[in-house]
Image 1 (tube, helix red, strand yellow):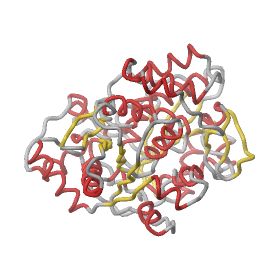
Image 2 (spheres, rainbow, N blue to C red):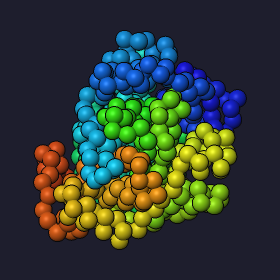
Image 3 (cartoon, helix red, strand yellow):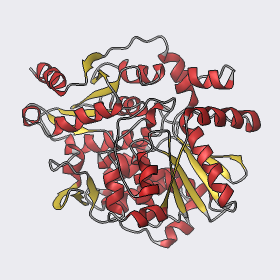
Image 4 (cartoon, rainbow, N blue to C red):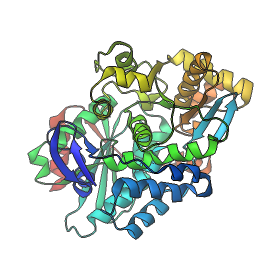
Length: 434
């Protein structure tokens, strides 16, 4: 598998370098040089295979023989060992539940696949690999769970102070061992900027072997494409006009969906659904992309004002706004609209949405007003229990928590508080390298 940088298509690397180094020094992002199409007979027989079996076929098609077949099959089978059910909610609208993994968020798929892939590539290295990851909520917990106690790898998670839910914070600050957390006085965009700058800092790269577990790492995107095929398998007999609606923050999920589409997955359209941090919906409307400082909302994992994966998506559409807009529709909702949707869906259908899924449902409803024959599948990206205060306040009722979240409530967090100044973060990194 060969990959190129979105900043320089002549900067070509293999999968190992792209995974272990995460980000090219030219500040681009790695993309597959070729996204191969899967033969039509794969889709006609897709229902006869398990989630893991279909995922392995997709992974092998993308990766080729760069990882030996038996090794790749073991990685996929171990990583994709929990379900992703499609649940019908209302006429023409279903949700793909992606919260049945260990951290109860969609990022478990990417984190588990990536940790096992990195471990495979890193097993003959003498020096420790340090993973830097910025999180707006769910990435941190998934990465912490996915890499916990992995030999030869440590993880440093940067998260914005006061801008993740209490349970999300517990997931990334209570494991210990090889998992470390930095509580940054700033926004997710600040955290992401610190991580990106660290990769380009010779003073740090001399002391650390650095990689990233954010969706800037191609090993996160590959497995996130798997569950689009799994959703298709579950709904194709109901309707062939399938639209995926993706609650979006850093846009890794949508990028993975677009990759699946280019592999031949029959998708009619994609909807990019955001909160008021709507730089991509604005771009789709106007053709003008203007990153901006993010604003806090109740759907905090989507509070991203400068989404990294925009450059990947733009590259996939050859920087053509018309092509982009023809395949992807933009949508955004305010906090008030999000809460209204959570309440209405519970009252009418007794389905509990988290604040991110609620935006996905609202966008799906809006789409079906114009296209009532479409089957819309929106991604429910995290268990509503991870946003307990908001969900219980909006629904005016207590909700049951999974045991994994109950166990977290009594644990004490361990995190290093830091400013959003890069000099402070660099000093922290240098001090711990001694």
